[in-house]
Image 1 (cartoon, helix red, strand yellow):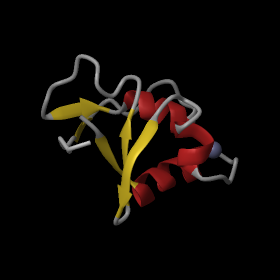
Image 2: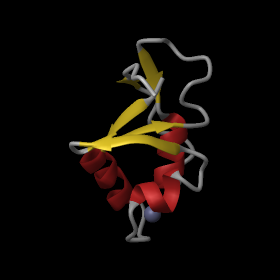
Image 3: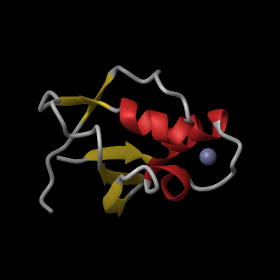
Amino acid sequence: MVYEALYTKWGRYHGSRCTCGQDWVQAHALPAGFRVVREGNGFVALVGPGLTVGVDEDHLTVAALWAAVTGEASGKTWPERVRIVER
Ligand SMILES: [Zn+2]
């Protein structure tokens, strides 16, 4: 199970909360242990800690990614759609 993060949406989250000016995937997601499994058409498919453990199969909470990208411990607790993709 992967989370297909919309690149621009997460770029906005990052840009409004972090001043590092770097790419949010390179600067935050990868160092936090997320891995890019696929990229394309404005999204980046991620797997990583907190994204696949004990979640509803149809939804997931991306609090872990939110914390990594924005540096805020809590915030994004509403569910996001996930997609099952072949790896
Ligand atoms: Zn940053």
